[in-house]
Image 1 (cartoon, helix red, strand yellow):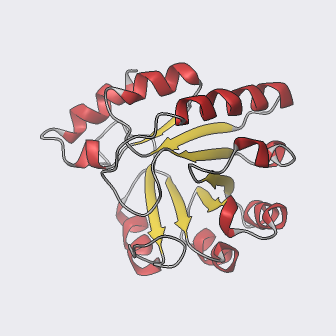
Image 2 (cartoon, rainbow, N blue to C red):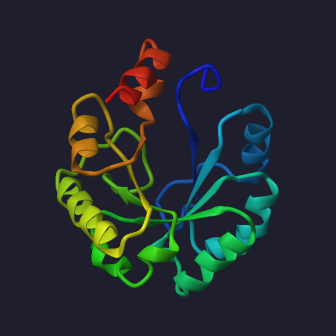
Image 3 (tube, rainbow, N blue to C red):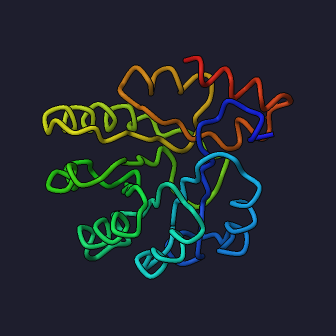
Length: 194
């Protein structure tokens, strides 16, 4: 279904039960998905020490490796290592982490993912303050003169998506809204047309 849809990427959430209170899947599943999915993979690591898995993620053909600011002690080094492995590098911020934390690295990342729910579980309610965070991040990116993309994940649906796009979001991640839809391909198309 994803291959037939207008989705640009497939976003994969890897959870370790430590950084977030849930466990999802690991490399065997990513490898299996990479063999059948024709869309570029945006692999979002909600784990402690994601830097340990850079080379392995690159070998599976991931287009983007997404790491949490809160999980990386040496974020600049991690971003460099992701790039050196041949992937695009993204940094994710939890809802309580201000965008100002990325001021000195914004020119080094390809994308910033703002979590609009607390990471770890699907189907949560959208946190309204995300709109203000998007606007602040868009201003920071514009002032820095970079091409950094803004991605939002959590509670993205027909109501929140247009507001997010208007605020400056480039990439929408939608899980429950798409996969619980009676017609996921049409739901994806409607999000693409915003």
